[in-house]
Length: 150
Image 1: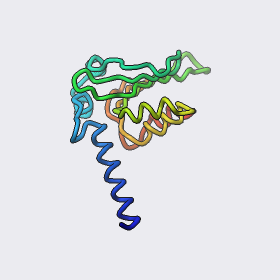
Image 2: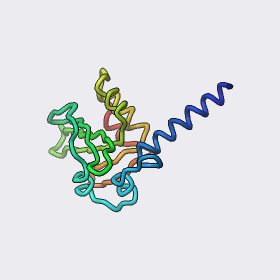
Image 3: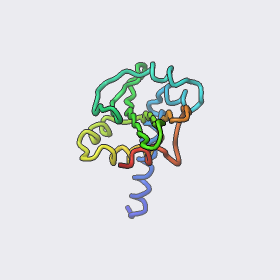
Image 4: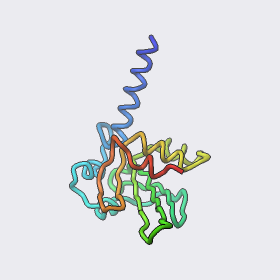
């Protein structure tokens, strides 16, 4: 098997896993599909999740593992607050990414959470509630990558 064939096989496997995590074939999560379709509010989305584990909790940065109440799909929840020193306007960012147990274990072993989260959110789709009140699926150009830069 040539190098090009191995690379293509790896890319196909990663693509299949990404589709699975985002609610594609294999184990779709109705919450992800509803967010992508614009058919669910942020409040309805969060009611469909339950907390499985807190990883980090602080006044400006939280990381938790959540689970879909219906299908058990794991989500990594992250909150990040940017505090303004210029005015009284702080930015609050909320992200939810479908993840695997391996992702959760890798995060727990990471030396730098911000770097790990920036990389994770910057390379796959996620659900975002931004400071402007927009709620939806985020893929392609990923704001979380920049939000989690240390």
